[in-house]
Length: 65
Image 1 (spheres, rainbow, N blue to C red):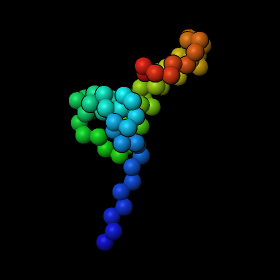
Image 2 (image 1 turned 60 degrees about the vertical axis):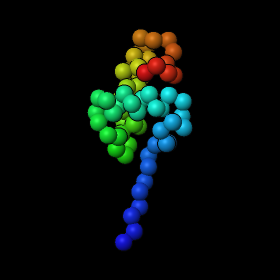
Image 3 (image 1 turned 90 degrees about the horizontal axis):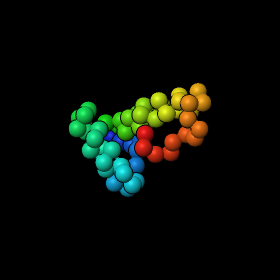
């Protein structure tokens, strides 16, 4: 039997700030599963994207979401 493991995110620590995001996620939600960090990041960016598209902010924030 062959087991194929797919990963949807880069290794934690390879991208600047990823360790702190992973630590916060694990404190609040528990162990990180496949796609968890991508979903977490996208969900945190959604309010900023809505504000930007509604014209409430002049420039879409690139960090600090």
